[in-house]
Structures are given as structure tokens and as C-alpha cells.
Length: 259
Image 1: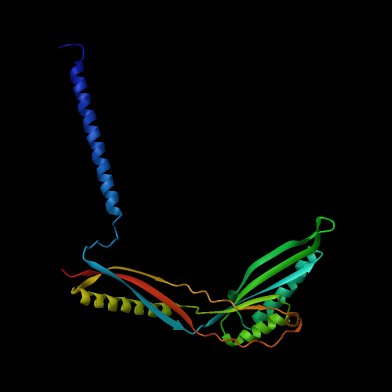
Image 2: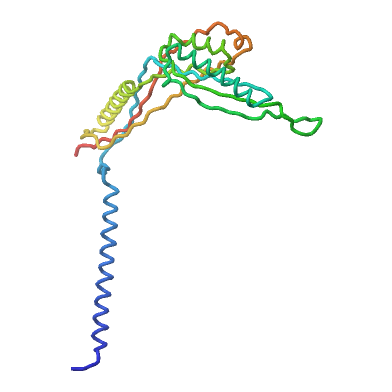
């Protein structure tokens, strides 16, 4: 027996081990790629060569049951502390009167509170000069008893509000309205698919794809600027009509064609 290693045998062995490792790496990479590709199709409908896709539209309306009104208070003074105090007193009074109308605290939300220095450019002196401070605060409320809207507008006009936006009429829970619109959209799509299949001389063999989307209507806010007369003593409340709210649902349905 030779006391020295057989280098040829060791080199052959090392070459075999390297080849096995290389082939194993290729196998694992291929397996991983196939697994990832398979995962990308999980939950997706099979792709059928013989199919048609149609779109349907459905609409539904409902009487609004909530009115959203925003109002704000702006105060000015040479002293920021005094401007803040006056603003707070006016807004707190307005909120107390809103709550006296049985408007829940859950339906009252502060939108913003701003404090800034009121500066103006002096053309003669060629520099900015302070004119004091401005404090503004705005609140959004939901009025669920629509008969109280005129009263709300009168109160904000008589108690120091400097701007009002609204009312914006909406449906608090539009689930039923959307369900009705979706049902009409599906019926519309089915009718179109059946008519198309008849014209092409084929038959439908079940739904293999479906998607839907709906519009998100944002009612236009009726801007009501507070006049000096309204701010100091109020004026007659306007007559407001809530009308109807409409939602539109669109669907896309893919039908497999019978063989």
C-alpha cells in the first residue's frame, strides 16, 4: 500500500461531488421557480380560450337621511391670547346650542384650528407690518333630523359663525342602495351576454370571472356666506330640498362558452 495519496482518485472524487452539488443547485432553483409561478396563479380563475366578457351597469336611488354642515369662526385681535379667547367663547356657545338641538357629540367633529399672525406689506415703508393675530376654527356636524336644518343655519348665523358650508345630503348606510344597484348591473350584464351569445350562435356555460366598481359621489356643498346682517342678528332660514342620492355600480362578467 502506498503511503502517499492517489491524487488522480481524489481529483475524480472532487469532480463528482462538485457536479452533484451543481446539479442539485439547478434542481432547487427550478423547483423554486415553478413553486413561485404556481403561487402567482392561486385564487385566479383558469384562462379559457373560448369566453366572452361583458359589462353591466346598475343604478339605485335613496332619500338622504343625513345632512352634513360645516361652520367656522374667525376672530382677530392685536393680542393672540384675546383672539383665542374670543374664538373659543364663540365656538363653545355654538356647540352648546347644537347639542341643545339633540345633536350627538359623536356627530360633531372639529376640522381644524389655526392661529397665525396677520401681516401686511407697507408699500411706503417697504417692510411688513403686523396687524395683529387671526384665530380660526371650523367644525363639521351631522344632522340626522333633516327638519332641524333651517334651525341649525339660523343659530349659526345669530351666534357669531363667520362662514358656513352645506348642507351636504347623504345616506348614512348605503349598503341596501349599493346591493340594489349591483343586482341591476348583474342582470344587465347577463342580458347583454345572452344577446351576444345568440347572435354568435354559441351557448353560455357559466361565469368564470367577475369584478365590480362603483362611483363615489360627493354632493356639491352649497356655500352660504355669512353677511354682516346675518352674523349680528341672523336672517330667515333658506328653504332647502334634499332630493335623492344616486349610486351607480358597474360590473364586468366573463362567461365560458360551451364546447
